[in-house]
Amino acid sequence: MKFKQFLAVLAATVLFAVTGYLGVQSASSLNAAAMNSMEGVSGLADFFSNEVSFEFPSEPFLAELDIVGDIAPSGSAVSPYAAVPANAYDHTLYMNLVDALIDDPDNRGILLYVNSPGGTVYESDELYLKLMEYRDATQRPIYAYFTSEACSGGYYISMAANEIYANRNAWTGSIGVIMSLLNYQGLSEKIGVTSVDITAGRNKAMGSAWETLTDEQRDILQSLVDESYEQFVGIVAAGRNLDPGRVRDLADGRIYSAQQALERGLIDYIAGEEEAFDAILEKCGLASDAEIYVPDRAGVFSVMDFLWSRANLARPKSELELFRDMVSDYRNGAILYHA
Figure 1 (cartoon, one colour):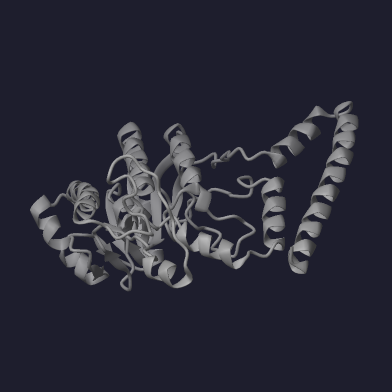
Figure 2 (figure 1 turned 30 degrees about the vertical axis):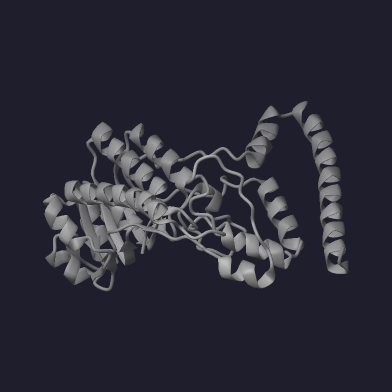
């Protein structure tokens, strides 16, 4: 074991030992406090919990969902301890938020604040369907505002909106589907590393980075991509009230400027952020100074999330681990609505 790795493991061990000691001390303190105030114990338990809760305003409000960054599973979601935007996409949080909004009588609508190149097909479609459930159950409107980009999966989710506003510098569209596969056969031959797959079924190892796709396998994967593409076309046709044939003409994967999108019926208005927000609030029957609710993420990550993240950062990764991270990225082999 390298000396740096030894130090990292030692540091992690010390960290967990200290954490355990503090945990015992905290437990003792909590037991004592419980004799006097169960409310205090409950509050600390909530602090350590990963359970998401929402404290909505007690007066009419508009709720904002930030569709920012890559649309991905919650395992890839932002942590408050990571160097990523604080409003980055969080799939589980948004699914729970929309459910809660359905049952809140003071909510007057949803604003999708979009700045995303897209992401995974599953998450894009799941949030879209949840938003459509909200519309059907509440009869309340959904509006979208595009900032610098609202492409592919970001545009897909926005098809749940009654109306779409875009900044004049926004890029949107990219209506299409992509699947990317890594192949490092050439590298394996150079470094003398091979992989052996024991399979039953000639296409079981389809997409393996160690083998070249056969024509049959390429056709199989193409059929999956084509099916997702037809789903995308149908969603856009329904959301924008366009003929599917017209959508196919537009959906060649290209990106459109805000003006080009407006001319093609892909958005409704070009406006600055303040102008768009004022118009949306008015259409929801709210004053221009009404509250726009954005969920507080402070309770989403527990103290243990922080400790684990610090311990992982303390241990340097080997070259092999870095390579594994690269080839196991969620994009590799995934069907994506992504620019």
